[in-house]
Structures are given as C-alpha cells and as structure tokens.
Length: 112
Image (cartoon, rainbow, N blue to C red; front, side, top):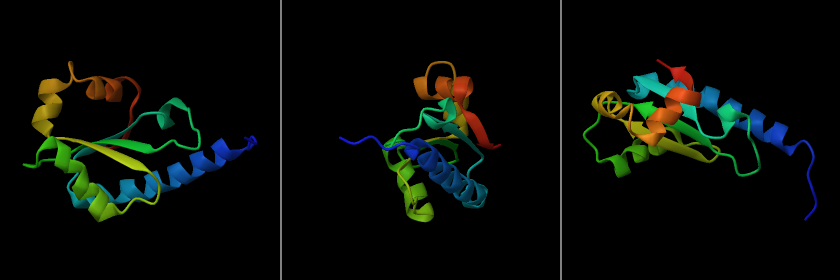
C-alpha cells in the first residue's frame, strides 16, 4: 500500500475545523460542558481518527441513545463519537468511569 505523506496534517485540520463548528453549537443545544477526548488531544492522528467528544447534558434518555440527539442535530461532517453523561453521572462516576477519568487526565475542555 502506498504511503501518503502529510495526510495526518490534513486530517488534523479537518478534525479541528469540524470541532470548531460543533463547539459553537453545543451550548445552544443544551450542553453544559464538553471535552475533546481520544486520539486528537494526544496528537495521534491517522486516516481513521475521529472526533471523540464527552458531552455533559441533562437528559432522561438511556445512555446508549443519547448520542443520537447530537448526531441528528449537528450532522457531523467527519466521523464523530459523542459520549453523553448527565451532570449527576459526571459527579457520581468521575473517579470510577474510565472515560471520565480519561477526560480529566487528557481531555481538552471545549465548553464549560
């Protein structure tokens, strides 16, 4: 397979542009806080790198359905994964949930 030089830089720019677009909409749609997690804040970008956003939002939806709201309203232009927690879950699980611990350790605050 041929190697493409400079692709990670292009992918990073694409992801960062989409992050700015999404971040501008998050508060209007009810997000209280949001953190960028995953490969991007670690600087590890490859052709499959997606945006991974941990969103804090009041909701009654079950955990496995919460991302649907964000996908439907924001229509991401690149692969994007939304991990949605309520404020109560954030407080109760901050020390035990691996995703929340990662957000505290390496996550970049997008809003909040």
